[in-house]
Length: 342
Image (cartoon, rainbow, N blue to C red; front, side, top):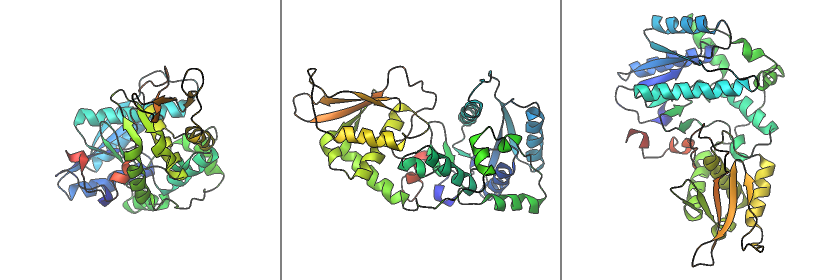
């Protein structure tokens, strides 16, 4: 938890608990951490109501936390379930319920139990989808959301160590059968053996500082939620910065869960850097990328050109909320400003 400090005095920390080994280990460890600081945890248990056993499993998990003197609340996904894309819909519902519970309780920090093996699987799946550099960096250790800071303190810990933690304490857990269901991508990946993942992102905080510095001269953000990219400044950036900056901008404006695919991002940067050709309309041809529309415009009373990035009409529904231009991993790695306490 040290990289995410400072925390409020006597912190009340929410922990997403499924009843599986990973989240139970996180809850017990976080409870010890909180009590040592005069605080406590609240276990938030999402009952997706997909399997007939889910209600009893949620109740059993709440009872287990109660035996360890931890408060628990069960959050039920009561809406109709889609016939396709069930796992993605369940994920969206889970985070919505967790965020709403934190807002209702006034909790500032939400812990989730993603660990090193999860990170390896995530990178492998994103590589298969040809994700760009941000996607291949894996999950962020911290994400700044409007309601709460979502923290992943176990990203450097192997699942075997979490299992050993529960075994040593004689704590039972529940194995979700969907984790071995071959219909789902992550389960198929696990069935094929442990994915390899090189920790190539150790220099991420420094690169985020460089990206932040590049964005100061290149971007202007309007109150309407549009981002203007100064074409001249963009042309002077290194290619890596160009791709990463555009990737971050379109994900922020479009509100997507994932950055653009690498091939699409590469072509889009080529268009932003291409000749400023103009048709009879007096502007370059617009194009779209990841639920965004990009338009070249000339600044009034100036010869300077800008690329305007705005949400594509009818595509953004606000479901995911705004995405940060600079990821929260940067703010959790040595920044002195504790914005979450203000």
